[in-house]
Length: 276
Length: 271
Image (tube, rainbow over all chains, first blue to last red; front, side, top):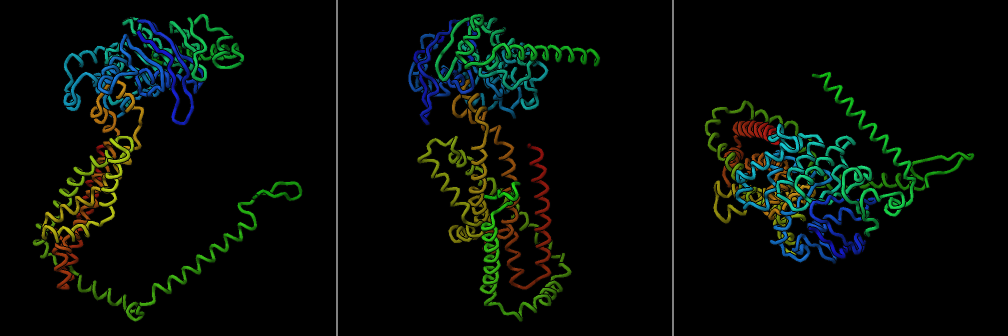
């Protein structure tokens, strides 16, 4: 489905963000991309839809070479690739509905988008998606009136509104609390499975990645140093990706985080029961 | 090195002794300069007139009071003209300033080497010339009247609105732009969906603020023949009809207060 060949990105400053990165993502596979800050995770997924121009190497979506297409064609390729962002990147002053419909911008002429007169089919789809992500009651709210988790759900709906063939997800949970993080990761991965949609998910949280994804790619200083199923990600692999550290200590901490999350959920459930 | 040691304890002072003396010397130079400048400034002053000033001012106020309210009847039409000059001039300014701002902003300009310098030049040219001077030029070119006033206000507004707007465009959150681009949107759609919503409150604020300023400026444009209440002011001043001047001042003051109230309301409603 997606094929990346010998991708290299060197920034103008001379910093090499990616070196000779190659991998395939078959249809329907959810890939977790992990690695320390500055390893090139964000650069890598942005090279796929050319928000960042790669210095050399090739990217294929199906049999179309993304790295070679011109500007008009690039827009047609981009609309087939949905993207979900770290800080949601919603247009804060537009409504939830407008944000979701902005996923159709690549498909409609300017006058339709300017007058907000999208085809009824697009609006129907937006309603269905908002229902799927659990935001039916918030259609007319402005994006900046929502909580973090709700905003990320709008971000997911916007990406899916594009009818994408591939999902690029950049740190979807970095600004969310542990419980919401899980819910968002679960939602993204469930939707990918429902639709057989391949995805690349950049993620900081190794345990969260192991819990939800089919395959993990580890990036260190712009090179792939691990590529395998989540189960194969042992201490040795983690050291190869992040450098040496007492990984068991991290697990303990992570267990505590999980316990906190469970307690928080329990507390909220009781609070709601109390309110009812 | 402001840290010194006294009996093994570190002592911190803001400046070293040397820096402290330099600071004193600096203050002394400033006082000397002030005294010198005051002498230059008052070289041509005739002190007899200055001593006479309170009496003169009192005399003027005496003649200016009470205001001749009957004069008000002849002010409504010029006042209406003044408001029109300000409003239409602001609209003209906005119409030209918006595209100029998009050409001038680093992140939206089609070319950094060509379009941006031209847009910046337009902004600077418009800003560096006062409305009154624009009006003076335009009265000479297209003759006296409202049109000259409207165009003068419009030309001056381009720079003000253009500059503040392009700075607002440069300060937008780029991640929203990136997200809209990633959907495969065209350039025009990116502006419509990612940039316009972000700058809209600032744009409204700038426009209303400029309208507010333009009402004040259009009140004096009549002094050079560009229409509005300034024409009346000019003739009353020329005839030394101080009680009429008072009425005009009161009318201008009231208009400015009202316009300020309106602009505050509009800004509050949009943000």
